[in-house]
Image 1 (tube, rainbow, N blue to C red):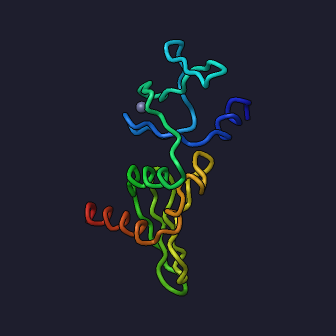
Image 2 (cartoon, helix red, strand yellow):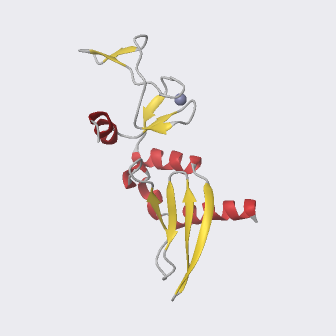
Image 3 (cartoon, rainbow, N blue to C red):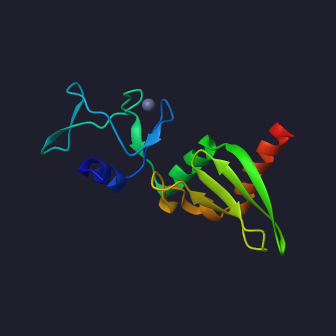
Length: 140
Ligand SMILES: [Zn+2]
């Protein structure tokens, strides 16, 4: 893995309020110089639309944004000795239920995302299941 990749993975997830881009990378330009009162630095702009409204959200806000952007792409059901489990694939990870009576939870797509990026959403069964319901209403 090259240094640039390692650097990116250590960065916090940021969100663009203009184009909804979510990522750890950014764009810099000489036209946008900021200062913290001591040093000048290049502002971190959205890499997609170069907006300045590219912000570091709190864990909770980030979770909300991730969920808003999330759609289920397909659902796979499987039988277990104790019931039916499922995996619902989304663009950001999978919604899981192992079919053995355990809770439904979210598994972020690694290494782009981590549990921290989603906050409490990881274990929010109501929200997770409502995403699957939305998919099933749309796809019969
Ligand atoms: Zn943007």
